[in-house]
Image 1 (tube, rainbow, N blue to C red):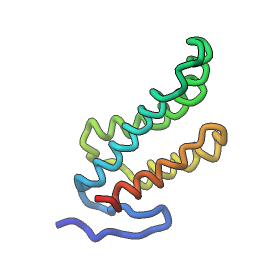
Image 2: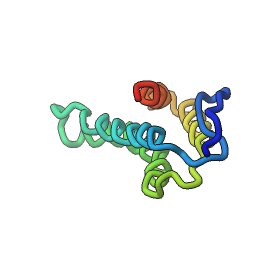
Image 3: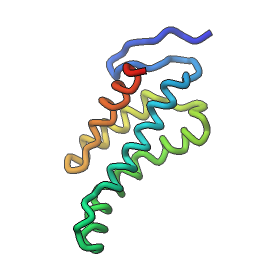
Image 4: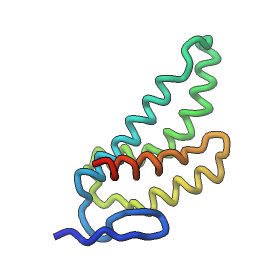
Length: 114
């Protein structure tokens, strides 16, 4: 039996229970949409300029999200949701030019839509 949904300062997340399929799908949606954001960086840029834009945007964010990808591969076993969102908040504070604040909004929207 799963623990009840808990509401805390960081939003909705499960405490001490296995993650359900909807939450897994919402986290995987974050990864998918991030990759789409990289793919849609304007292509009229020259290859060199496009590489610079991708490097400034994608590099730091990919570094931030690589643990989420690893958790997905491992089916989110022992994934620490609160730690993930705390690290996103720290990243956003330290990287004002490449903030990924929309990830939390997207995650919660995906959960509510299902």
